[in-house]
Image 1 (cartoon, rainbow, N blue to C red):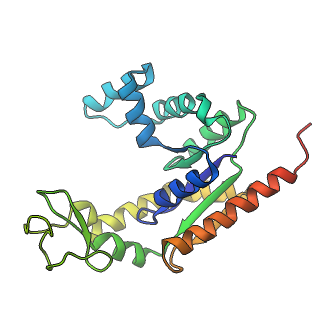
Image 2: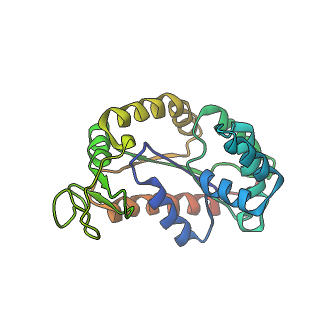
Image 3: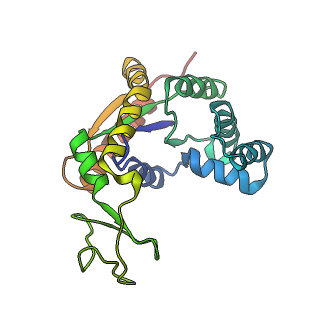
Length: 227
């Protein structure tokens, strides 16, 4: 069973994907983790990506596709994969369809963890971090014991540039521009399930994610074999 997780920055989809991967017993595949492993293992694709990054460049889609292909060819991915952070645009979605098709597979479920923009901006802009210790806090979700000070060293907490409201809104705009076509495609294929990320806490969101995954798995089990 191959599952794609979609959602804007700050939706918590990575956490939900990890929980589902552990329950279903299939690997979670994030492009960042795959890239780091390929570089660490010194694979041809990993070395190619490392050379690009060392030169200050962004890893292009074709190299990312090679990384995904390499990961899908592994024994652990034979029974399915949960994709986290891929695909990010329509071109990547088409590439993923091709990669899975070559293995006789397809995207069986696309889970969109949805949050309205004001909630995302509030969630991300509330983060504060300690430059010295690397600890992260949240003004309302996980505040420090003393406002503005790190619990460990007492030093001042700062807001990262990435967590400033204007930066977050720019990231959300780019996200919407890139992923609107992906959502439409999965909706047309009748594999898209929207999960409200504002209902309750992370456990409530996961309950909805789990229901969608188990329903999709049951539907696959009851479907007649192709051909």
